[in-house]
Length: 155
Image (tube, rainbow, N blue to C red; front, top):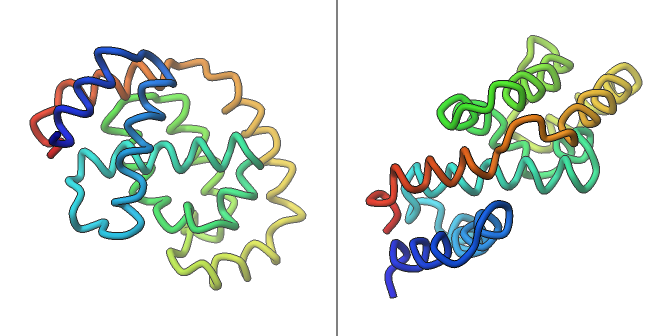
């Protein structure tokens, strides 16, 4: 069964967070083994789920510490495409704690910066995390809409 058919089946049988997580579970192994085999639309789902997984599990400090933050720029870009303005704003404020609002893709460099900024950044990230957890925007409906409007780009 093609990925498109699997995604359509998931969207037909599941809703909300459950549907998005199931689609992410299809895409994530490909993303980590052969990212070049995914379309930008497929990567969009993985990027947003990486952000959610990390922030919900340990806040922004965990997100920035781990490999998920390698894709910070991409995450912000796809959030702008999908449309959750509050989520995008929260992530941008978290990024603003880095010098020049720049999060290095290189994890080692990023972790060295984290050591220098953590005392000031952690309280800000804690507050932003609390805002993030409110889910004032229905990210799952926005992602579902995005997937459906781009379903032909899911292979």
